[in-house]
Every structure is written in structure tokens, then in C-alpha cells.
Length: 410
Ligand code: SF4
Image (cartoon, rainbow, N blue to C red; front, top):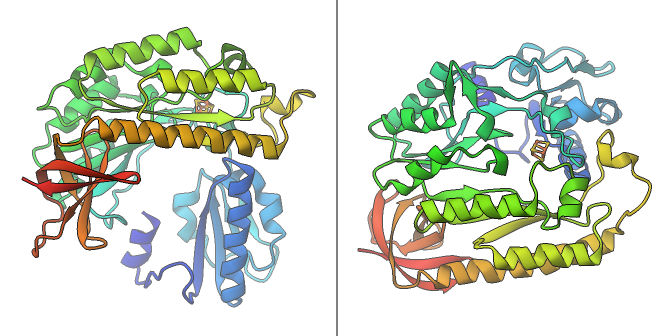
């Protein structure tokens, strides 16, 4: 959105790393590593462009404005409430102390301007929600992003229609706690149904959804091949031990989580089930970790993303004074679980060798056209010598290559 706005008022937008008169750095603060990477990116920009005006926006600006203000060359720091209005403030604060705009985040539902220039080809994000009220004990997001709120119904549909008109065939819902979407009397099932009515929009994928918030109606839509909602469910587990789930203040037990999975698998044929697991959480013993690994192997997951626990000032877990796991041990657990995830991903693909699937093709790369199947297997088909990007094609899945599959168009 900011890039579109810049282009519309006459700026030439260049890739990060090239010389520029103005830098806008959008930041993340979800882990300590994210903070470090953001500071590095800011310093890189300022060093390459000492005369430029430098604005830093987003979650790290919201939470760490004082630290960012210490970085030489930063002119403007804007938190999440006003980040999309950043251009109104460009020019202020230069050569003095940086101007810091870090207002309280409004709890009201919101509208956004439509995105015109999608940075990656053919699959685009549709932001439907922001913020979270769940307050998991490790998580900084409710502080950085504010209370749960939803995007205005008409504004959301308007962007989806505009995207479809531009040729976008697949939209991916984004937000912090998407299952809590609620606006003008509509919930997330109403939203996928309304998107299903947009003629040229062929696919909708939900990026990640909290286990306690998935309405059964979503499974009916995923199971219906004529509905645009794809059979893909990313259901963050975080830990496979009831003790650790409680310490994390997650809203379910393992037995509940298993019920959710059973329900999803029984409703949706050929579902891709993915998850997130955090390892090395304060209080997670070796036995707790092994229990998590056992459940990960036992449940029908296709993969997991694995994150080492990262201390975030201001979160509830920081009050604990025992059970801290050394960083090396967190990393060891990460490596172990990532290996298990690779195996599960391989098994998921192996079970589908020789089968047919529908793939939406993206920009050509490495002599072929990549894309995703409906159930989220990354594939590549050979270049037929003419442009087939943005076509929805039937393929046969022929061969496993690391974490993707070779396929042929039928
Ligand atoms: S539900 Fe997700 S975003 Fe919300 S507090 Fe928990 S981990 Fe953070």
C-alpha cells in the first residue's frame, strides 16, 4: 500500500540496497532475532544513504521506539496505529531527534486502501483482521498489534473484487487471529462464501488459524470441490504437552487439539494439515519435548514450522524465575523437530506420487513454472516454451525433489 502511494505521488521505488533519498523500513518484533535483523536493516540503509530521510514503521517501532531512536540517522519512527499515514510525516524531525509517533492502537474495526501492485505474482494476501486478545504467555503480538479487530466487510470484499479484476486468481487471508473475524454481523464462513461469489477468483487459502476458533462450516467449504476455499489448514499447536500448553496459556488441551484434528480430517478429504511448534519454552523438560515430538509424529501433520522460544520483555512468562532453557538446548530441539518435519513432508508427498492435482502456476523460475497444489504441495512443471503463468492446470505428480515435486501438465 505504501509503495503504491509513493508511486502515485511521483516517487520511483527502488529495491532495498539501492541508493535512495527516502527509506521506509517496516519492522517486526516477534522474536529477539527479528529485532536484531531490523536494527541491522536500518543501519544498512543509513550507512548506504547517509543523506536520505529514514522512517521506521511497524511492530518494532511500536515496542522498541527508544532503542531505534538511538540509531544514528533515523528521522521518523511510526508505530502500528499510523504506519499507513507515514508519508504525511516524511520531512519532519530531520537533523534533530527523530520524531516518534506511537499512539495507542485503536480497538475499532478498520478499512484499508486497496493494493494495486502485488509484489509476488498471482497469489496475493488479503488482510482481513488484525490484533489478538488471547494473551498467550510468550507472545508480544497483543501488545505490538493491539486488540482483535476486523476489516470492514464491504472494504474487504471490495479489495477482493478489485484483485480478481486485475487477474489475481488466489487470495491468502492474513491477519493475527483470523478465526475471530467478525464485522457487520458476518463471520469468517460468511466471508469465504462471499468470496466464492466473485467469478474470477478461483482460490482462497487461510494462512493460519487458532485451533479454538475454527467453525465447522469451514470444513464443509474445504470439502466442496466447487468452493474456492482450499483444503489447507494451518493449526498452531505450539506444544504437545498439557503442562507446557498451560504454561503458555494456550486455550486447549492435547485431547481437545486431537479432537479438532480428527474433526478436520474426517470432513476434508486430502487435507494438508500444518502447524507451528515452539521449543525450549520456559519449563519445557526433555520429557515434555519428547511428548511434543511423539504427538507431532502421531498426528497427520504434513509439516511443522519450528521456532525456538524467544524472551520478549513485557510478556507474562518473563515473570517466571525458573525453568529457563539454555539457547543451545533450544536450538538442539529445533534442529531435531525440523528433521522430523522434513520426514513428515516427504511422507505427505510420497503418498501422492503418481496422483493428479490442480496447480496455479506462478512466474517461471529455474527452467520451469512453480506453483502450489490445492493442498499446498510445492511443484514445478517444465517450461513448455510459451507463457503458462497464472494458469490453473491439472498435473501429475511425478517425482520428489527435496521439499517440492516435479510434475507434468496433463
Ligand atoms: S493467539 Fe497467537 S497472536 Fe494471539 S497471543 Fe496467542 S500466539 Fe500471540
